[in-house]
Image (cartoon, rainbow, N blue to C red; front, side):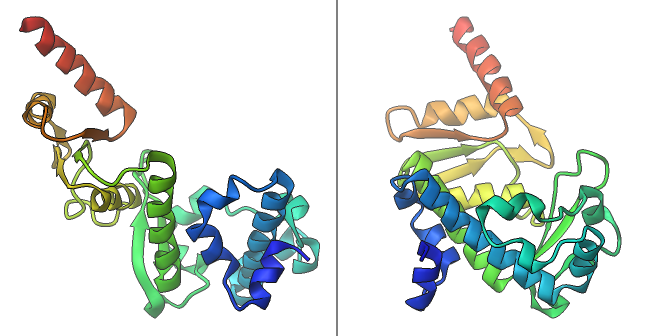
Length: 226
């Protein structure tokens, strides 16, 4: 009996247990973890196959059914949904939940010209927030300090998933400042803020690599002028 089955028999959710115990997974044998993850993903595949007509039709065209996906070794059989499908005006057909159950509509950055749209219900949002916080704690182990965020505040781009996920980081810190306003970044102001925290707070810089790089270049230039 695998770990996922044991948790179900105890009345626990394998997915929620996975999200809340990420640290422990790194201590388990690799095969045990794969079996655990495979079982959870297979269960989710079965759920969407049975409850989503659009996805079920896609699977039938690929000649894949729930009996074909039972665990980790079968995951490559799961049909993938093309990215462009999330960019179409009828992308709501991808949903297994009903429209009135949608809590959050998330959009990608739209680097291709058209943003992808994906929707999340309450249970999915609960798991998403738990997993984001757990990931930050697992990899960074932060619980204090000041954050210099090189991306817009949530109110400027409330539907962009990346911005929302990164702003969750703020809840783990003593305070934070967003220094991208209306798609404009002022690296000199960022250096000024970082210097004001010197000797008072642990400083954390959070943002996309190209903006971090730009900040470093400006900071080096300012130091050379001192």
